[in-house]
Image: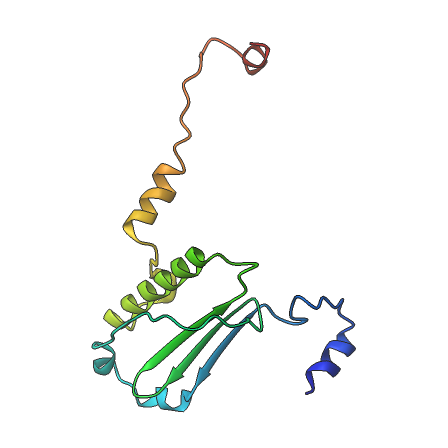
Length: 146
């Protein structure tokens, strides 16, 4: 189905800085090879990062997986929307998710905790540290008047 025709028929408001239909693109090339991968092969998974040339992102964020003798992931993103540290965090979470799935492939995704212990500490305790001492004998109005 032609993309331009689809967008035209949906009568979407056009914004040349954004994709008309989606913001995230996930591409998996050579997916037929996935049927031949078994758990034993996944136990030797190795995750490496590499630098690449800066390009113009076609969509807000794209994840491109390419299978050869291994699985390669390239993440492209719009720097007007995402900061580099956020993409690194997202990749770290994805890496944690993959590691847990490889270690126990029968685990339901909902049972996987992709956060690091440091992030859990920060979210649950540091950011949630809202305890404030206040006079118990005064009302909220009294406190505002002071």
